[in-house]
Image 1 (cartoon, rainbow, N blue to C red):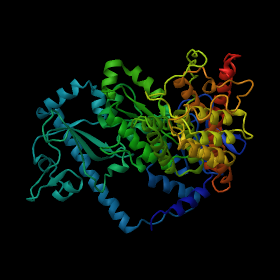
Image 2: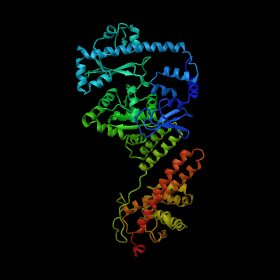
Image 3: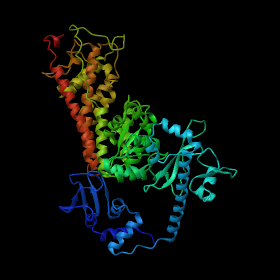
Image 4: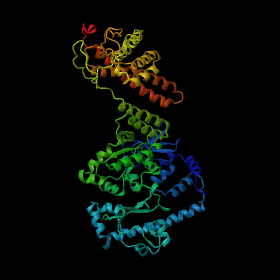
Length: 625
């Protein structure tokens, strides 16, 4: 039988983790836990904790984390099965006999590793031989030190279609092909997959060679610059991170892991002394690779080129990560200067410049907001609504309910601040004309139209009702004075009629009477002396003053209409949002916050509008002009 998760759970339950750890680390009791100095990095103040109840250890300094099995692997240096056997002996448990099928697969994998390890030795020997001269010159031009070349196992694949069968005659053709070293064309001819390339071994988490990557020396048409091994029984590119076996110990020391776009970037960073870098292998980051990263640190740093392709790669990684976000588990994003990769940046500006960028990564949510905000022009309401729809579509992919709620609120607040910014103070009105002067209608050379005597009389009766004071009466009076503006504000007034039913009869009558406009009478629906609503005693509205230029008056009237309509609309929306709190508390709360902020902004505009009118000088002759 195989070692099942249930069997491992039973093994952990029988082991007291603190007793196991105390064999090599001094621990002291700290409440329900034990604490001590971390064995994975040098420290003077204890930050390493062991929790027997939860069966894990954790270091808040370097991020080391695991259970009894991982302790034996990471600290004692045992292989997995050796760790299992030793712990089982402590716990008085028998290790299950291996599954024959799984054992056969493990044996086959071990045989394939023999192939890849032998191929690695051949490539290294070829690099140091006569055929490897051009490759050695290329690596020297790149500035790689001899130590880095040995550490990362640089090699050379001769430009020979049959080099490997000659060099690795102990392995059959089928094994070479199963290990990804050989391929066959449509005619059945078999040939070496890697030819005329600088070779790099790809290793698993235990440091065993499982695949290869090769780079050509000179650009050639129709030839891929980089070539990786295909997926095999040894190698799954979506589950492998290049340099993981070196970066994991370094990450425990630095508390950081850096993800770059390719393995040459990893080596460039290592050459500069930055050892905690990994890279995917020719694909965007996968869910499994993200899990591997989060096992090392809580916030891996993704480093991308500053061009458009790098930005798209960052968004692909973010889209993969959003459904997997969890408390204390996110991503940091670093974008390099445009046109530079890590190697270029280090050569031009030094290691310190790279470290400064890595020390201040952007948050995932900041990168998401900036990418979608800048994705297309936002000059129209429809485009802005599209921005919000894209942001909320991202939020809906988040599985953790608390993080989803927080992202919805944060992105909603950012969108509201962007789409509904506070309005700048209006410019002072132009000098008023002499009393009695009339300006021309905006955009028209013909005399402004008016109403018939009958229409004017009906409107005067409506306006003589109870709402003679305040902003609504002033707006209606302004529209009576400038009937050409009624059609401009028809949609807003219709919305007001729906929201404020008490205003509906006046608004409907205003629409009906405006349709009867003719050119026989004065230009206003009612004259200043004929039943026009009186303005408030302490507020003067420019659009009701005879001396105001008509263009300025109409713009002032538009601001008044906007203020009149926006507040009840927001109040109605807020009431609807509150009513659905029980069914959607997270969404309702976020929407209430946004609407209350907008209401506050409208209140400030109303106050500013009132103060501006109150500050206007009162001409004692104005009402009799």
